[in-house]
Amino acid sequence: MKNRGLGFYFTEFATLASLLSAILYGICRENRYPVILVMLILATVAGAVVSVKPFRLTEFFPFTFNAIAVGFLLLVLLNNLADIMAKNNVLGLSAPFVVAFVLSILALLCSAVAVVLPQKKEVIKQ
Image 1 (spheres, rainbow, N blue to C red):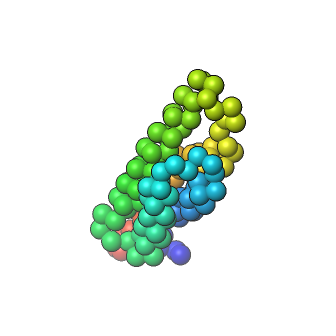
Image 2: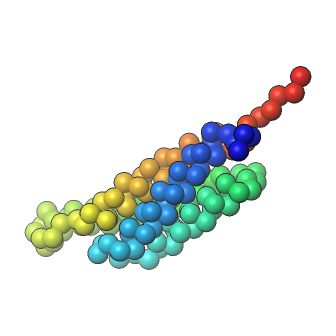
């Protein structure tokens, strides 16, 4: 654990946030698009792979999967908000969906930061 860089911890947080978001999105009533669940699960798996064995340029995979999931979640959010404004949806947004959306945004931001930060500390030998 001593040779872990700051990017490792951002990757771990993004992986955990993606996993929790996938669980919460799976149980909410707004889960219309199965691609969101698939992308969140792929982001979780890719983040776990990057954490265990970081290869060159593999940090982009969790970021890409999280970005696609957030894009589709934004689509679902905007559709639901339009239904609420048109008074077609009187129930509003469910709490698991809102928490899943926020966690997905956090996962996207953390995976974006993990792309630019090193996964391992550079040891300078003199």
